[in-house]
Image 1: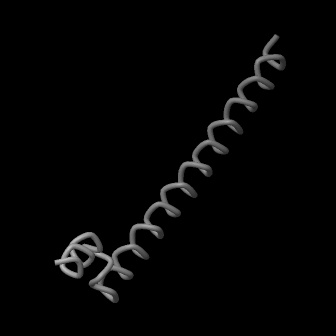
Image 2 (image 1 turned 45 degrees about the vertical axis):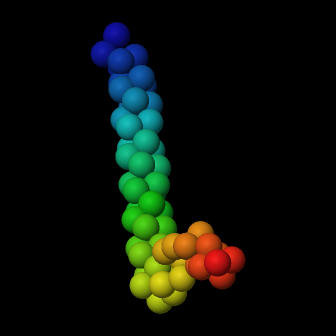
Image 3 (image 1 turned 180 degrees about the vertical axis):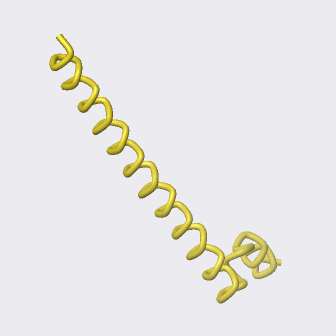
Length: 59
């Protein structure tokens, strides 16, 4: 009876580790996208307010 309980515990542990790996990868991807977005905005100030630029050109 003790040996039968080991299987489900191992499966739950593997699911938990897998979920942690997926969440960590998703968090790192999100941080990378945020960092790239900030760098792009610093390099090109026109990306911050494109609607304002079009409005000025029409006037």
